[in-house]
Image 1 (tube, one colour):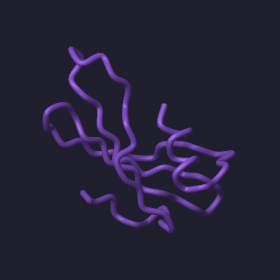
Image 2 (spheres, one colour):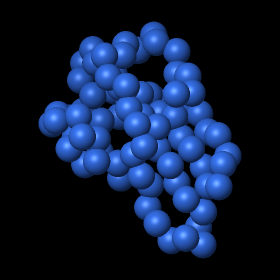
Image 3 (tube, rainbow, N blue to C red):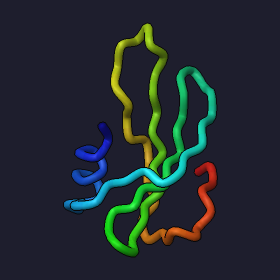
Image 4 (cartoon, rainbow, N blue to C red):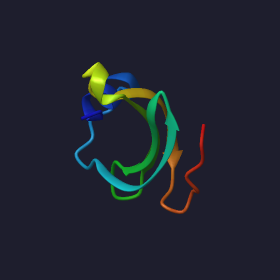
Length: 77
């Protein structure tokens, strides 16, 4: 659901967009940190906020880091 937000903000068109691993952090909703494969060798880390269900809003891309590899550790940022 955040692929269009990422492509727009990173000025990229991703043929591949596969989540590899994720971590969560509970706040007033849930913050997801997601490692996503965007090509054969390129990965990005996404920070996605999902508000509480009662707010009835979809996930929002908060931040991202490009230039990652499959072996880069997924950390909170």
